[in-house]
Length: 131
Image 1: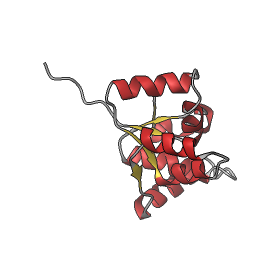
Image 2: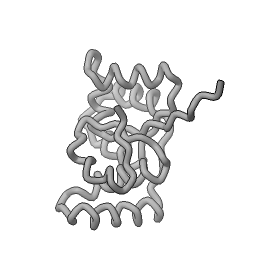
Image 3: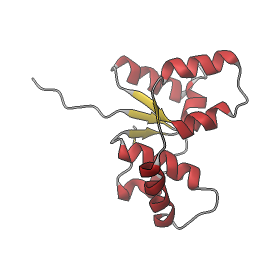
Image 4: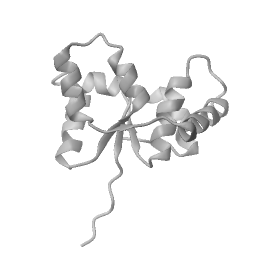
């Protein structure tokens, strides 16, 4: 029997922060995905946001172990993010979410977020939010 391909999971910054807290829903969801051997990654931009902290060495190390693949943000991602920004009404302060969403869309990955309302406006252009 051929199993359908499971999409990679991209974590946004808020999800990663909460996933490091034992007992949270994000921690449980991440544990399930890792148990299913799903690929878990972050955009390099989300990783940079995470590193802005505050966080300790243990948190940084654990986060790096969980999502040890970082997707670069290059010209293609930046161009797609600008398109999302314009599509979503040019909301001030929303460009970081546009970069994270564009990276997930271009990678054909699901986006795990603790703030779905920040990303729902991109569903009609191809973003898939992780369940």
